[in-house]
Amino acid sequence: MPDASVSESLSAARQRLTAALSAAGRAPDAARLLAVSKTKPADMLRQAYMAGQRAFGENYLQEALEKQAALSDLVGIEWHFIGALQSNKTRDVAEHFDWCHGVERAKIARRLDEQRPAGRAPLNVCLQLNVSGEASKAGVALHDLPALAETVLALPHLRLRGLMALPAPSDDDAVQRQAFRQVADALNDLQQRFPEAALDTLSMGMSGDLEAAVAEGATIVRLGTAIFGARPPHAAQA
Ligand SMILES: *Cc1c(COP(=O)(O)O)cnc(C)c1O
Image (cartoon, rainbow, N blue to C red; front, side, top):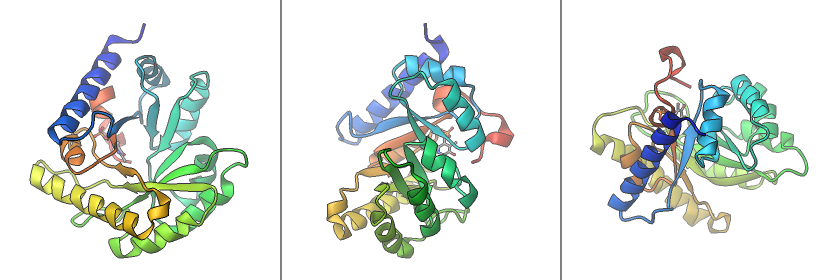
């Protein structure tokens, strides 16, 4: 039996997503849930899997590899790397993940491409966009985005899917939506420039701003706290 608390909060999160999609006039399957499981034990991921969840997001490589080994019996589980990605970590991401959400430099993309094992499907990639007003320096600037997209599109072992963003937290719905709108506009621009790429992903929205992200077109929302509960404070940031 799945643990009641994980399956219950997962089902509440699904209802929240469905309600947000409906409020935005979007189809019920227009966005999906990525369960962000950083700092949480493998057993909790297993419970979420038993309750039907397949996509899991992890930020810390060593921790993720241990959980992947513990959960290798779970057929169809999908691993997304959503942490900050330095050059010395690209091999593990290329070898052990299905998606990488935070690509922001051509050098990192080239390494992921070279290190993706032969015979595996291309690694799904989102480029992280630095939205204006963000305190963090993470992410590619808007004016550098088309060139980076062009580079990634030429790499055979990567499949560019779209954009990811991590705006500064805000309690103001209008501020949240303005940040997400920039990301949606940037994806729209890339879709015009590279129509053959069929870019389909906006990875944005977390436990505190899911509704604003869905209203602006998110297709993957990354929920941690809402599904697995609060994390220890020192581990709260990627
Ligand atoms: C931790 C994290 C999340 C989940 O945040 P919650 O507020 O717990 O939902 C989503 N995206 C990224 C990149 C993260 O690091």
